[in-house]
Amino acid sequence: MMNRIAALLLIIAFVAIKLISQGIISYEQPLISKAADWYGAYVSKRVAVEIIRPGAIRPGIFSPDDQYLPDGSKWQSIGWATLYQQEIDADKLLVVAVTPDAENYDQLINKCVEQRARLVVESSGIDAWHTTSAGYKGLKQLTEQALRAVVFDGGHHLPTLGLTPDLIIVPVTQGYAAHAYMRDAVKVEKLLALMEQEHIDCPVAAVSRWGLVKTPSSMNQIAMEALRQLPPASIAIDQKGAVLAPRLTMRGKAAFMYESVADEKSLQMVRKKLVEHGAERLYIAFNYSLVTDEDADGFIKGLEHYGLQVMLMNEPRNLVGAIVGGTFDVQRDRGFSIKSI
Image (cartoon, rainbow, N blue to C red):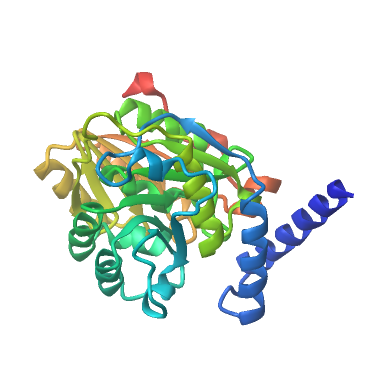
């Protein structure tokens, strides 16, 4: 009986994601929103959360007693909109999910700080905003008192590696971190190899793609379960990084970029920024919904012409493509080898 229920849930989820990826239905529709919230709350309490890159939780935010509470009795888990709608229980540790429908990020960060949020779980929009000048300022303000977890579901999150989040959550589909409709999937093994090579001290938790929905209950539940599996750090964790431009960050001698244009103007801007800041390596992901394979290849070769080492991190697949096979031609994959860096 349970197997039949699980199979039915998978079929429903697959069909829903396919319809969302085609723009036929939207999370903004009340019925879809309620269904997604119910599904997320149900499966996130039953799905396995596995730490696939070990690490520790940055000190100074939680006490050990707070971190390991299995029943969550001292946690208050909410979505971003609830910050404006109801009074927060000051006796509980506040966990806030910033879902894709969030807006007014400046105001939202101020509200998180005002309400003393201890953990903020971010989706794509606010994660990208942190790579702007205003967003980077907000990031510094937020992380003085809260941990930041990022749901990494595609190459559009690549620049967050330069800003070292406290936790990365990867919804895994057939070995990929893939978005519902954005064609920018990243192989999980490639992501982990990058983090190892560049000494990015951030733990990574993996969960089945079917077990995570971008609803507050789902995002927060999975983030808290990951935290319970991680020890507190005994020393400070290096979070040094810099924003060079929107969607372009840097840590050490490595830069991380998400590119949606790939024209000559963008190439020259990126080259100038990287040279000015002494970058030696660039890890890049393309928005293949807007950039062709040929333009991406030309962009990479243009940067290599100036002596930069460029590593392509993603493939033109979305979630459905990762399941049934995408359009990626392995002969055009420029590859990724730690030995080549």
